[in-house]
Image 1 (spheres, rainbow, N blue to C red):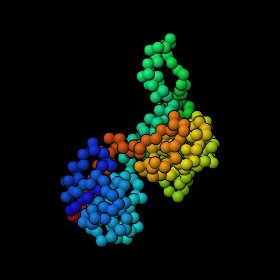
Image 2: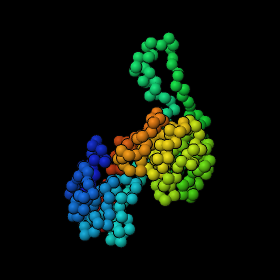
Image 3: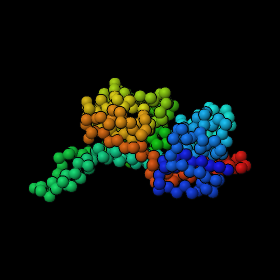
Image 4: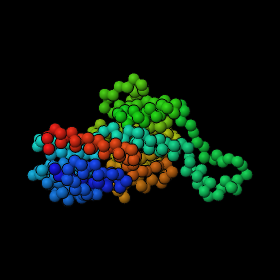
Length: 312
């Protein structure tokens, strides 16, 4: 059985993927350009992909029997065509909840504790010259009692909410599907969440209901001094509107995902003037060492289950 890994580099050079060699004959590519995909997957029984698109053209007249996605999202695979042609598609879920929540809180502490300011103060030799034992010119705050609004209360949202609760925050949530009902936390409408929350964290999927969910009009209602995080998907926040808001009012934004990745030079978030209000990271929320190890283990499990089912 032939297994082709299309974007090995997205798993990280520190990850051991030799376990796939126990499942078949493996050909691994660090990256695969769109023009290369069709040729590389043509004779493969199993294709392992993270972000490389596997569409009708790539699957047509190929030997593909399974597309194993090293991610939760399946939007890079033509699911309709795959189903019509008996090609199984398996993704992974639940591997990154702790990692995303931890990065979210790292962003919160970055803004709320002002440690970058105080490190710079010491590094530049200012404390040594001070007449006082302390320096508190950049006021910082406690999380206790702050209202935290979670947009999307799935696995990751619940993980984040539980950590916020441990810091004695008041947690409320907005269900983007309208179907989530969690008795542990108060459910509110989006406008109330935006107007009343001290911290807003996005953990919902990108779909027709959530595209541009946050825009200029409703972001104007966010409290001055509030922290807004997006570790869900780019496109949930309108990026041009967000860039405008950041330069108009005092809100602090931790953004780990953008609509086109890697970020384009033309992205308005790169043009923000008040850069101290924006923390941009390159889609790292999912990627702790432990999360990536869990991910690989789940992909292996998916492939083994498929092999056992079809009796390769």
